[in-house]
Image (cartoon, rainbow, N blue to C red; front, side, top):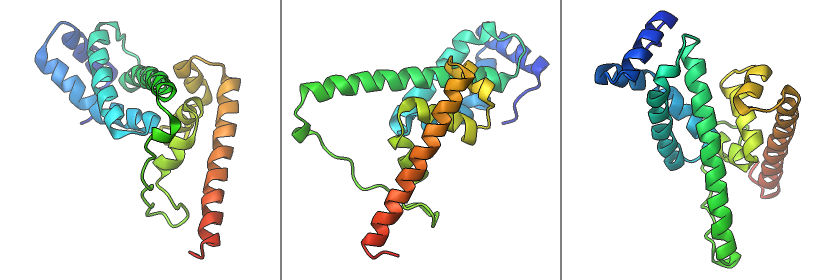
Length: 192
C-alpha cells in the first residue's frame, strides 16, 4: 500500500487516534510490512519479529495522536526500531536467566544454517547478522538495509554519531571475518 503524503498522514493518524477503526486498519495495513521487516532484521528470528511487529503496530496506534506531520515512515521507523531493540534486550535478559539456571550441557544447539542462494555466502545473510552483538546488528541493518544516515541512526538508537560509526566499523569487520572463516572451512573440507 502507498504511504500517504504528510497532510493525508496527519489526517489518518488523527482519525486513528480518535478511534476510527477504518483509519486504524488503513494505518496498520500501510505500515505492517515495513515494521515487520525492521523487526525481523533487528531480531533475526521470525517468531520474535512477529510478536514485536504486533507490539509495534499497537504502539503506533496508541501514539497516533502524537504524530505531527513529519514523515510517517520516519515516525513509525523510530517506534519500530526502539521497540525491537527493547524486545531484543528483554530476550537477552531472559536467555541469560535461563542459561544461568540450566547446565550448558543441557542446552540444545541450533540446527545447521540454511545455505544461501548467493554463491559468495555459504549461509543466509540473517545467519551472519545473528552472530553480531545486538548494538552492531541494529546499526548495520539501519544503515545498509534501510538506508538511514549516521545522524538518523544516532537519533533512533539514542547514541552519538561517533558511536554509530564505531559500531558500523566493527560490525562490518565481524561480518567479513565470519564470511572468510566459512569460506576457509568450506575449502578445507574440499567443497570448492
